Amino acid sequence: MTAADGRVADAVRGSWVDTHAPLAWRPYLRLARADRPIGSWLLLLPCWWSAAFAALAAGQPLPNLWHMALFAVGAVAMRGAGCTYNDLVDRDIDAMVERTRSRPLPSGQVTSRQAKIFLLAQIGLGALVLLALWQPFAWAVGIASLAVVVIYPFMKRITSWPQSVLGLAFSWGALMGWAAAFGRLDAPALLLYAGSILWVIGYDTIYAHQDREDDAIVGVRSTALLFGERTPLYLSLFYAAAVALFAAALWSLAAPPLAYAGLAAFAVHLAWQVRSLDIADPDLCLRLFKSNRDAGLIFLAGLMAAALLAALS
Image (cartoon, rainbow, N blue to C red; front, side):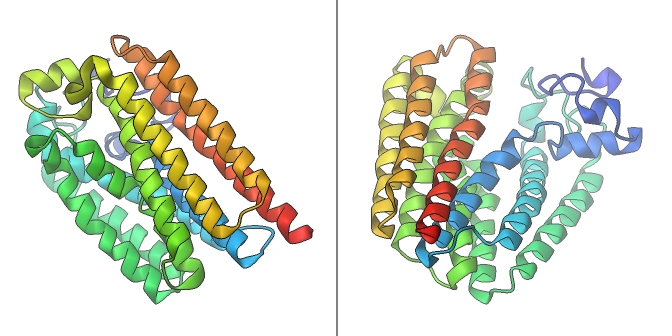
């Protein structure tokens, strides 16, 4: 499917956007990647990890459920805003790449002015979510994330490490859950953030292998192009370092063994990704990239189970 029928080449076929959303809404929902929720999941998971860390630190059986709900809404809104902004910046590049040329902006389904209005609406929703945390320090931390979001789309033009900047942005939630709970940042949250950055670099390198040939033609840089055939080695290093930093974060919390069991299961999942990777198979790269939602949920389950048992013991 292409722009001729309004669909996007790299979108999931038969999604609810294609089958149930009103026709007038579909270009905007595609602009926000509402038909591809994996990005929202990957933005949300560090937020939920951080909230679970805060529960462990406070001796609570569960994370703050209000915060968890707000993070879910905020992740959807801000991921959509980030995709919209990224598409505005990259519309000329997207027009030259086979996988992206049918997206709403380069295909003409949405004008730049319409996309900018939609962007502001999504940012407005994200701002309401941030205010609802009712924690001034968390407001400041959340607002600070915008600086990273603004520069990210330009990084692939000037560095082979744009995935590292994406890591800074997509891991920001690792700070937010702790900041919302305590009104400050401490070592556990900072270690969680650092580990999450490395995790993001790893999984986004896998994702970038889908586009490496087109990227090389149009002059866009990425860690996929930089690492090439050595990608499994680099993934092993990044993933191992991420797990080590997460373990250090748990140690700084004096977390119970069940939390480490969840981390161990998370590590096994990452090892499976590296072992399964074939960078010449774009469909496999996409599946492995998406599987990081499951990896993140496994780690979260371990954290929440540990918090519950620790509070009850």
